Image 1 (cartoon, rainbow, N blue to C red):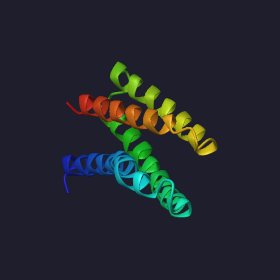
Image 2 (cartoon, rainbow, N blue to C red):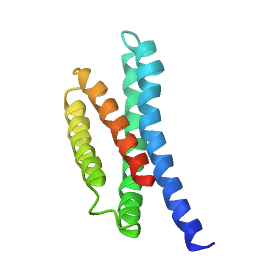
Image 3 (cartoon, rainbow, N blue to C red):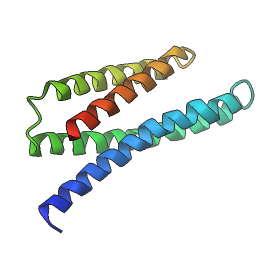
Image 4 (cartoon, one colour):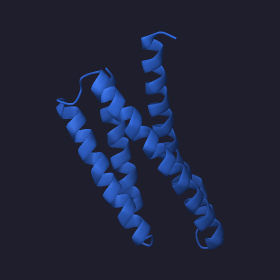
Length: 127
């Protein structure tokens, strides 16, 4: 495998982890929560908990691959990367807040919107 193939694999893992995180949010918001809210509360908690575990793995992959790519592609001075990292930190605060106050449903929307902007900035960095 050439060096370019290796970095393609790193980028692939980064995009896969992002797809899990953002795609999972879409799935929860569009299908799981509307179906289970007001009914099977324990089922909803189980799904959210399971997604949370996967999210932790996805975040670890995103951090590792993101650091590697920012270093390899010399992006640490990029203002776009700075905005992206600031939004990542903001999103982390929102996720922790939501974990402590799950009844504040507006936080779910803020996490999702911030995640979409992070994806947009990531795509901007990739070109």
